[in-house]
Image (tube, rainbow, N blue to C red; front, side, top):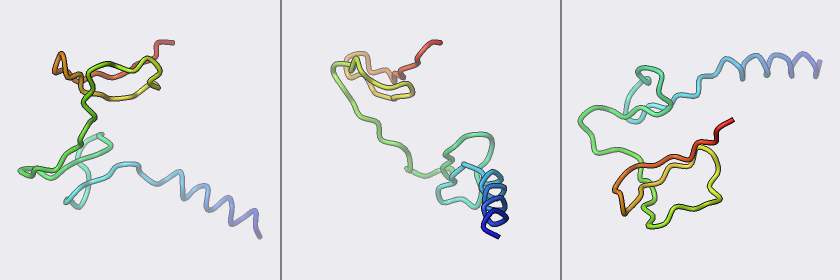
Length: 76
């Protein structure tokens, strides 16, 4: 019985979508986070003067000197 419940739970977890809609009923498009139009909602990123050398892949930062959004991408 426990195996059946575990299998059903696994199939249910796989079918869940990872999109989040903020002040909307459902997310539009393929983005992970979707905000309603004509709002001031958004994401606040840390603003740094020196970029860290040990940042993990996918880290988003705003460079204060360049005023440019930067992301650490590990090449494989």
